[in-house]
Length: 173
Image 1: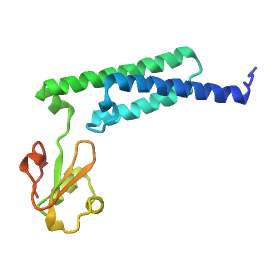
Image 2: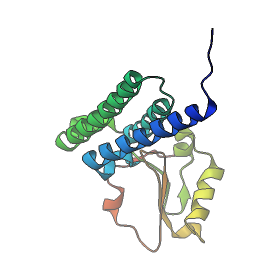
Image 3: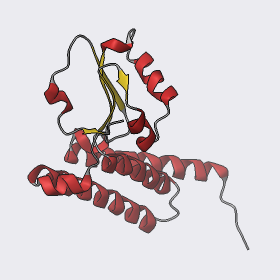
Image 4: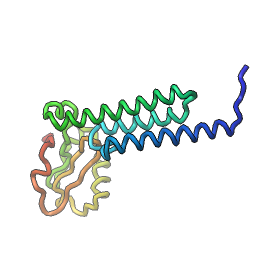
């Protein structure tokens, strides 16, 4: 026979487990560093989503054993991220394996239609990003780059240092 716990017990347990889970995440971030939830790579994005999912699971744990297993999984994620970041720093080959290349979508005021097509970025999304960057004249746009994180960077002004575009991929029309 199913015996219902009083609703207040469920709230208190949910609150307490959420607070403990959040505290554990803060401890892990303090150990691992500020980079823990950055959006520098696609790996970082997956890390953020996975920790969020685990935190949600921790807040709904029905036993200390399952809560502990979730905290161990969070620790494992942070350890994998730390190790991956170190390997990326140490090896260009590993960096290339783990990271996509940023793609130039627009250069010197000209939209690169082939790049938009291959990256599946809509022209309307490109122009929305230009507006967000306060671009007033397309001829002043030096480059628009689809970064490895999915963000779009807009470089505009009178000139653009070429080294800002190092490591980008140009898909010509």
